[in-house]
Image (cartoon, rainbow, N blue to C red; front, top):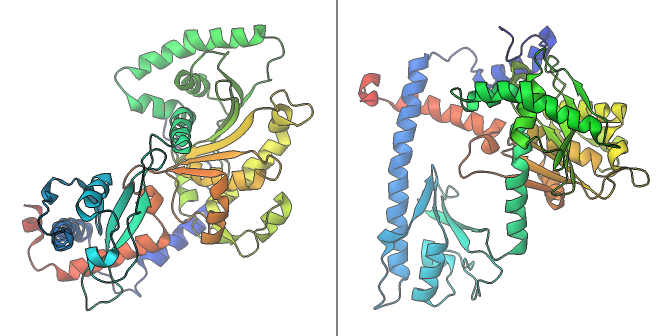
Length: 445
């Protein structure tokens, strides 16, 4: 019970990289003298200060829009809906439409933010295939003597664009596999009141029935499950999420052993609806997973690229995720499951598409796995749901754009985490601690 969420497989040397990371983060030559309540108070103060800045940015944006408005035109800016982050104000397609009507279509950054001449709106947009624009007014720190914002324009997904609709449908459909591979622990905690009963029913009735049906199906793919617990709950929870209909989805292989740091929990399933072989990798759920997350030192990919057929010279990857990707690819080669399913000459599902996917840590592992397998499976697709930041070097990330799709929900924290952002937060907390001049209990009030 004490090891339900891992820990048995962590060795003394596994803590080396994690301790180095934490030591570097908090190293100040012995001068740091703070307690937990100081950090909590600083975070509260930073949050309050950010809320004030959001209001200032909105007011500043209103002034710029009023200044840019044509004479005699009416513009109810207060009705614009905006999503704000700590240093940005994001105005979506409502602003696009209103500004085009009021200002005649072609708007320049100089009109909005004073300076520059880069157009931030297209001169025309028929709306048939292109999405609207998201205008992100970010704090401009280029000149410390001047306070203001600069404009960043990002395209929004459009319901009228075939590619956008496909990407949303693909992510929506295959997300279930990333949820399913989280096994019984996540399934139970999703709903403590009812899922215990549902899982018991799935294990005692639905799973045996599914297995029996699989035995009756002639010529189906062989199944292997490694690391299952004594009660068979991992497979039961996995199939409960994706469904027990063998005509739509089949389990080919599952590795549930989580007692070694560099070994990943993953499964291989056949999705007949989308004609796909799905390789789903679990995200962070055990202590071993968090040791991997903190192994943040970049590793050069020259040797890996030479082995797997891509140019990795001068490119880097998160060491912890790369170690798991290497192990996973070796495990695939050892069991030969993908070859059995997707071999161009003899594979039973050679006309299916390989989809490598994961959520969080699983996404961080899926991307290098996809990079390593793509030479062998050129039609491969990789779906990364909320992958951790700082995964690839910039040029390598751009090279993966053709086959990797990343899904990030709004201002999700995990995809924005990197060594640089954590260090920035540390510096802001320490600076705020020094700035606080009132009792901490007053902040809490």
